[in-house]
Image (cartoon, rainbow, N blue to C red):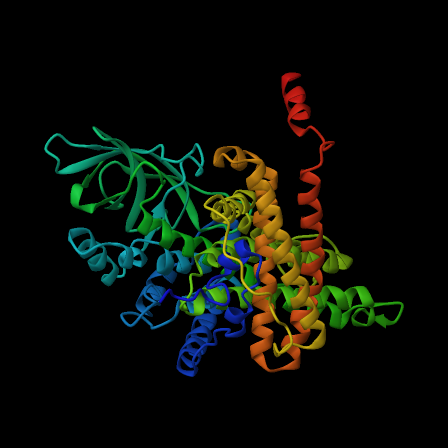
Length: 550
């Protein structure tokens, strides 16, 4: 007897492709267990006390240097091994929360911990098969080694294969690495580092990852990275005839920049970096705004009484709720369904929400002046480091790849479902019994309609561009598809969390977020329709003419 197809999509991206919002998945929103929650709260309090007492965020931002002895203290307290039963026992979600707590004091310090625990050499152990490389990384991790991962070449990160080269020696015992890597987290303090490189052999070029101690001859840190935010974290390094044992290499193929196992782990790292940073920015914005609004008046009327100020505060609270919801969905548990697509789009969702909140807070506190914390201290004003975290928030939209590149890849992932054939069609979503307030039920219905519109848009794009390469070249349309998918995921996450929370505050925050998200969704659908109009501006001709004119 043939197996009956499921009555609803089994993953978010399947729902996007089919045009049917998978509410059944989001209604079962994941919640942290009581034991996990208690363990995380204890560690957050402990870590928060340490960074607050030992770290001056403005000083780290100015010098790019950690306080003396901080790394050793973090190592001794077990903060370099936070995940799993062999460490402090945190989940991936609570690792992000821990990094966010440290980020609230200094983005560089918090993200150093996240890199160490989430994407560096020791964190990659689950992706490394048993053997000499696994044994090497496990041993160094057990010793408390600081580690990092070097992937970005001077030519950028979006070429298929790295520019750094790895040449197998004649006896096959080792690879010799040559090249340069930029903006590598923990590079200046790492004991062990992973490096992406291209191996050229009889079968053609292929990607590889190579792990080496940083005291290996030929490895040289060249300069710290002076970012426009998140200072103290990264540095550049050069590889000159660096010899790496062949058993310390993990080879991929010619179609990906990194071997698949490493790439999947890296996807978590990029997203976690943005989420932790955004949560820190949002929490700080709320703290700064609350203090500022409480003491400021205009003509005897407190700022908190003004409609616009109330909307600014509510929007930041709702954005924090949304980033928390997206992170819970993608990181709290793997779940029975595929959540890799949601993990990917959460990176941009978090970075954008953090940036918008920071921008609002700069405007709000601008009533007292646009200046650095140092300038505020000199004149005796409350020295909230709004300017520093504004730079940090903008950096989050670039670190882990530029935001529009991530949108383009998300759009391509969704469109590939349509290029592979017409996706399955499921019965229409029923919103009668969702556990949502009446207002949020209407938001859910609007999101459901947007799923259907996105499906039609994708079908038209694929029909008009049957060759995948031609469709990928319609970059703006593909980017808008990726952004629309991201917005719809955010809507599903906040509504799913509100439905399961059982409290009015969650419903209210979800309503604020959904109201603004629906405006963005409507605009994205309108812009996608405009991309199909025959009289659209000729951007290519305008840019070519300007460039040709010098």
